[in-house]
Amino acid sequence: MTTSLPSNAVPDPDQAAGTAAAPPSYTHRQILQILSGLLVAMFVSNVAGTIVGNALPVITAKLGSTQSQYTWIVTATLLSSTASTPIWGKLADLYNKKNLLLIGLGVFIVGSAAAGAAGSTDFLIAARAFQGIGLGAMMALVQAIMGSVIPPRQRGRYMAYTGATVAIATVVGPLVGGFIVDQSWLGWRWCFWSAVPFALIAMAILQLRLQTPTLRRGPAKVDWLGASLVTVAVSDLLIWLSFADKSFPYASWQTAVMLGTTVIATVLFILVEAKAAQPILPLPIICQRTTALAILASIAVGIGMFGSSVFLGQYYQIARGYSPTTAGLMMVPMMAGVLISSVFIGRWVSRLGQWKPFVLAGAIILTVGFGLMATIGHSTPLWLIGLYSAVAGLGLGMTMQNLVLAVQNNVSVRDVGAASAAVTFFRSLGGTIGIQILGTVYANQVTTLTRTRLASLQLPASPASNASDSLSLDLSRLPAPVAAAVRSSYGDAIGLLFLIAAAVCALSIICVVFMRPTKLRNSFNLDNAASGR
Image (tube, rainbow, N blue to C red; front, side, top):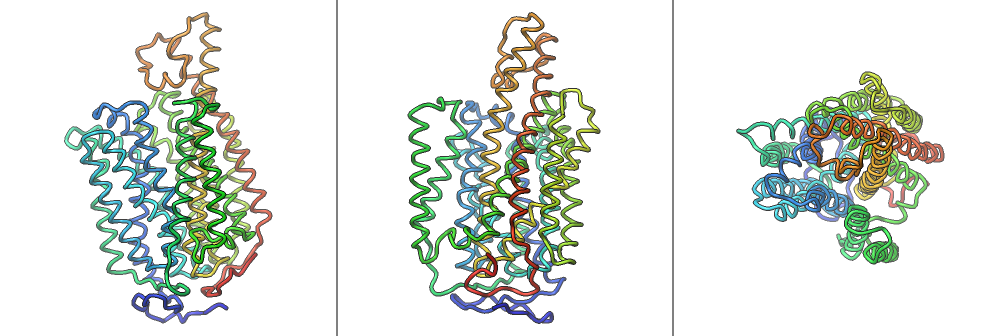
């Protein structure tokens, strides 16, 4: 059953626990008021995820961090946000989404304030992990709230704003981080403290403007066993990816223990979810044709999106010799592509009521863009790199939000939180795996090329011939031929990463081809089962 809503209805107050009323209908102006708070929250969360990249060398130098701790400052946030995303998504289907988002913002604020006040690296890692829990809430709940207050047919139009926000935040984050650490009157602590006032503004707007219904079946019951198992499975996998071949070899007892635990926890999680009354990741939804294929496509997009952006910045800094701030500016073409396609394609999706043609076109364009970027070398003209990355950005903007929209259109509004979180969770997981795998490939390729070029120049081996060491070297202090060999190796190795990313994204094309095309609804689906298979 679907329920059409009168366009002139006024949003009702939050529904009492367990009430299965239809979502209130909002006017365009009211939706924009709600979005103002959601977009601020999304902007803050995305900036927080990227602001540390350029500032991290300064932060670790000030705190006297080790190389292992350096990695954990990033990994702790990524791990906790990824693991908590499906939990927040399921809670969104059981409790009031507005209250949950306010709690998530509160957690983020406390974590950010604590991170800025850190006096040791261990304390900073713990604060970053706590901050990541709040980030997981925003990743899951912003999409869930949009799915519960905006009918699918109209949602593409408003998802354009979220895509634009992500694009702008991705560019602003590294630039702000580089600017802050370069200013003596600010210092690195403001990389974390600067997010607090924006998060408070988002809380104020949401408190005043947002009313969300609670649409659940029966009494609320959180599947804490399932939540614990998925957290263990994801945490062990991400920890292993972070430290394998760095702190211990692939063939080791640590690998056996971590991967064994991941497999056991995953199997137990599936068994528990199959019997749970209100599972964290409902298997009937995950196994639906549209949702399952959207998840696979999102993993591919996540690998390409996160992996490419991380190492493209490294290419600009090491291979081309630009500063962190300038390297951030070099990412503008890709984000401009995301911004343009998000805004215009989102409107076309809403106007035509069709998502599949645009998602398929986006997957093809993304694959072509990464294929073009696979030709990049150390001397490729910057304008050509900008053109190629803009093409990839156009593909990203067409796929990211519309894959979530396809899943939301396929499920009941009561399950929109879990379904949205599932896509976001697997996209983040794919991105995390992509960063680790592509990073290993990049390091090995750089090492091989550097050693070959030093040998061809009849130069002796040096610390710069090891990729993992060359990151910490000041290339300006190396002999000119050695520094040139290192830079050219970083420049020529990047093409292999984009070739792998293109191959992975080609899989997303296959997934989208087999997704069932569905017409976007003008109303909310209140059925217990999803509407499509």
